[in-house]
Amino acid sequence: MEKIMFYILSAIITVFAVLSVTSRKLYRVTMYLLFVLLAVSGLYFMMEYNFMGAVQLSVYAGGIMVLFVYAVMMTDNIGNSMRSIGGKRIILPVIIAVGTATLAIYAIYSYQGIAATKEATVTTVEHIGNKLLSYEPGGYVLPFEVISILLLAVMIGAIVIAKAKKLVNQEKN
Amino acid sequence: MIEGVSLFEIMSLTTILFFIGIYGFLTRTNLIAMLMSLELMVNAEAINFVAINKYLSPAVLQGQVFSLFIIALAAAETALALAIILHLYRLTTKIDIKEVEELKY
View 1 (cartoon, helix red, strand yellow):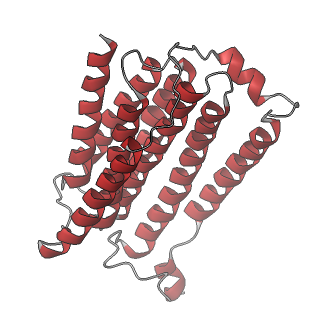
View 2 (view 1 turned 60 degrees about the vertical axis):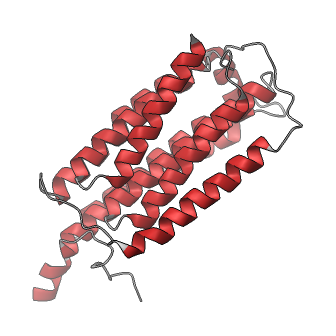
């Protein structure tokens, strides 16, 4: 049952990821990306890491996708097709992507020394919270605080960048 | 871990997802579409962190905590990049990398 579910999720992820890098309409690309993110959160739920699945749903599928939709709506007309990079110039990216992916998968499968566990472990919010706020060796309280400062800096930076005056008007004055 | 699914299968999936992102990043010329390809790559990495942690050493939580940091960083990066792209659009009304040359020199 879990195996079938994993393969369904994998198929959704792969198909919609391919569609989201090949489609010409920017709106559709946004929606395909949303489906990929939802399927990825399903993968987290299957790995018994429910907190990460919820974070993926709320931050990625909720927050970042809204940002993307707003950005697309402000810069693009519905029904506009994006410019393609043209017939011959697509060959090199295809060769790079397929070749390197084949090489990487071959390298993964040729490695034999993995001793994977057989029992499923559930990660609860309590585990994550204790780990994030622990001062002991192996605790993550410093990165946690650094991340909060970084988020504040990004918030201020985004406001400052978005508030800047238009270059065209400055030239006229 | 997922019952009946090996680590190899999950890592194959994330490798494919990562290189789909690479392909999109190389072929897109629209800045927002390039950023979306970047999101695919970041997602593949986050799944890898969680999967390897769950399969190889479920007692420690390093990979799972790191994947949370990855999500936070990806959100920050996307917000900042979209602010820059929207500002660029207000300056030049273009977001195609073939036409935008403001930062070239």
